[in-house]
Length: 158
Image (cartoon, rainbow, N blue to C red; front, side, top):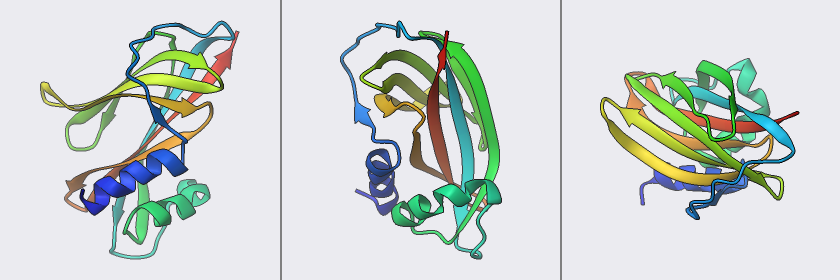
């Protein structure tokens, strides 16, 4: 397992308390009408020691999970979607992220996440993330570093 992939797996556990969920369940939450999905694209490298001011609260997690010294938020977007709906996010490198919130159970948001490059899915998984938590996933190399995705979800009350 590569160091970057290992960091991403650790990120699943320490930042967002994520659990894989391939149960196929499609139950929606009775307590909320929608989910606000957040996706941030962070470029990480070792060209300095800067940390984007918008990422300062997550600096310890970045440092614990990834072998880089500099983190810059290059894109951040939020979309409110109904349960079972989908949120699409363009990310650097001609890719996009598709998030489909499935259910809210025991304080956790289950969602399907796909990263698409061209016409093919390069990542496809279902996960369960604590409400209001953020998942960090290390990704592909960029001309100026490595892309890290920050994916989060917040239930929206009726």
